[in-house]
Amino acid sequence: MAFHTAQDMRTDLAGAAAHVTDGALVALGGGLSARLPMALVRQLIRDGTHDLHVIGSAHSIDVDLLVAAGALAVCEESYVGFEQDLGLAPAFRRAAQAGDLDVRESCCDTLLTQLRAAEMGVPFLPVRGIRGTDIPTLHPEYGEVTCPFTGETLVVVPPLRPDVVLLHAPLGDAAGNLHLEQPYVLDERFAMASAAVVATVERLTPTTEVVAAGITIPAHRVAAVAEVPYGAHPSSCYPAHPYDRAHLAAYVAQAATPDGAAAYLERYVRGTDEAGYRREVGEERLAALREWDVSEPRWRKAFA
Amino acid sequence: MTYGIDEWFVTALARTIRDGEVTFHGFASPCAQVAMHLAKRTHAPRMLLIEGAMYALDPTPPFIPPTSNDASLGHGASYAMRFEEFFDAAVRGDVDRMFLSGGQIDRYGNANVTAIGGMPRPKVKLGGGGGGCNISATIGALTLWSTNHRSGRCLIEACDFITDLGHRTPAGTRAELGYTGGGPQWLVTELGVFDFPDGSARLRRLFPDTTVAEVRAATGFELVVADDLGTVEAPSERDIALIREIDPLGVRRQEFRAAELDRRFDAHAGTPTGTVP
Image (cartoon, rainbow over all chains, first blue to last red):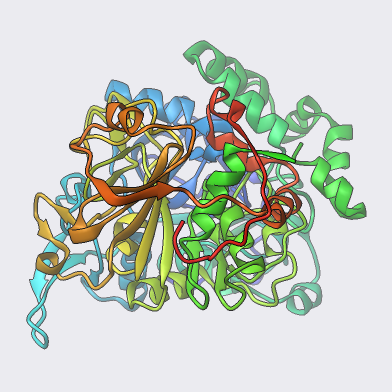
């Protein structure tokens, strides 16, 4: 949780991803279909990074791709899936059922509390709920204390200090100041609790533009920033573009089998770079996503 | 004018909301989402509507998208809570109602959204519970729902894994566990509506194309039926029109098996009371 005081944090995608070492505790920014750090996830897979322990709230293709690539040892997310629309996460489900992944399912407020403990530099904090459920069976590290003031029994949880949080932001500057759009999900807490923020941005801009938009994550938390357009695709990165539902649907269908997942990884990840990824997805299709704000019917069409 | 079970179901969910309540739905909950907007535009104009994974307050989305944290769901809201702002409010008891579903639900309203077959080696790994494990303990009242009752696999004797808290678990009652939230108040399924007198599910309303025998056959715990068992209150023509306006993409229908969507009903112009589903 050191301060990062260098003036220029710019690097390329490979340089950014190199901050993540094998076995690292990695926080994944964004959530569900919004602002997932997908270019960084793809680069970690290309680099063969492995034995990662990921934490986060409700996530989807970011976690599922890492599982499909065999990059994860531990998954401590509160949800991994594609909502009612596209259903269960195929690779995650397969690995969990086969015993190939250590699933330490957590809960949103528990993760939040553990990050706050890290931010505050305290050895534990109490958290509501959990007692009486089966979630503690997945977490031998949780404890219980008797409150010295009220006498009630409370579940207490230790700090979570990620080695790195991966974020994709619509705007950032060379120093690493980042502007995010809502929902921030846990990104601000991740940034304060983690040893380093590693970010890709839709656009690198002068500091004045980030200040005008509003700095969500300050530069002194950020260790690396790389400009990677569509770095969140196929999740959304407003105001640039909504999510690519058709791409996600095709992924979920293809990854239903291990061979299908491997073919997806070869075509979109291992066998290419980000420029190649954009070509495979289709430059016209990506450009069309950016036109979501032309009209409300156009926006709606993105979801049909 | 005819309408479908999806529209009646959403209306029943909406009527579990009381005017003035602070109400929240989780992600992946299209029926609850549409229901909250319906309630806001009908009997509960003073409710504070917290829009799912956007945490936007009283938004007016142009449509309900098939994902829970799209910017369209924040449209028209002047403020969106931070994640931590919402969860702090929920755990300290300032949120009145939340909608929760589950792959398995028992008579006490405990829900499993983690794993069929339990952990660590599930038969089917479900997505997971989000924040339900925390805030099901502290939110004022819960409206549970399932669109999978008829399968016989959802309402069961005991959950393989308890993710979200009902009125009691093997570890004790809510009072014994020290929880301040009121727990499940209603359970709405595609067959009928349950309430929880004394903390255990009781069939209170039936959809009119369904029998008690069908509900019993689909329910894994002993079915208790209310003395005043009635029909689920039907939607008005205005309710139906509003649902179609709120959800033009029809994401609410994603929750139902195709055969259920064949259930159609004739509309009437009744006046809903907005108190009991």
